[in-house]
Image (cartoon, rainbow over all chains, first blue to last red; front, side, top):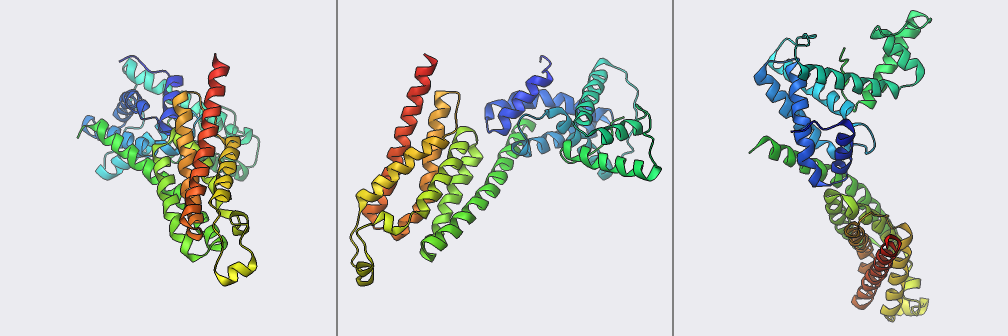
Length: 172
Length: 184
């Protein structure tokens, strides 16, 4: 199947959240490999299948709450990360935090997640964005007192959680 | 069951859950308004509003957008005072319990309301969606305005319902023709 672009995914999700059932199958087929790729980065094959299916069920169930016009991937990966963590906790699987990138599919997955996170950070106010970038070691630490910085980071996490639609997992 | 049909079922349940929650909020408003304006006998009619709005919300799209606007129009019909729907009924006649019936007045009120709804009509891209929005407006308006019927005679209720339908149908037709003319 041809790779569905992010813009196409956004359009499909907008249609689905509005009740257009015709968008369900193409969206499902586009999201399933993404959910699987993402889950395989953290879990073994059989658990990854379970996590991918749980992600798709959760995404489908919450599709009508999705706010049209927002990018779908940050929301999708946040749900996926949450489901993976829940499954890992349930099965007492130790997550491999940083599995090395070994194939083009994994690279594609990483790129999409990075973009999703960038879009979510771009929606933050300046202080929160700088705080998150400093935590990710991608920017200088703001020249503030440690307590103020901690407060900013905590506020930034809370906002990211809202933007990502519930679960927050730092991907990097 | 395949994983895709399981996900589709989850989607349908999710839609039903969200639509029911929204419909419940609106039906509660309808129940309160009808209790205040008409009386206790009209409160069960809020179930019709709940059912109609939950169904339209579950289906989604133009039907849902139309139903929500129709329901708002229906609230106006619900709030119409009896002295307006039955102007020949003065205080003395009310006391003696011999009020006249005025189906024509109810019909006219319905038509005016139906036409007024054209102002809040959702703009849809395709002709099919336009008609679906019209059906949604009629469904939403009638489901809410039905509570008004509990205080009316059958003829008046039919007059109000037909008036609303006629008004909505006229505005649907006019908007469809206008959008077709604009495209041509």
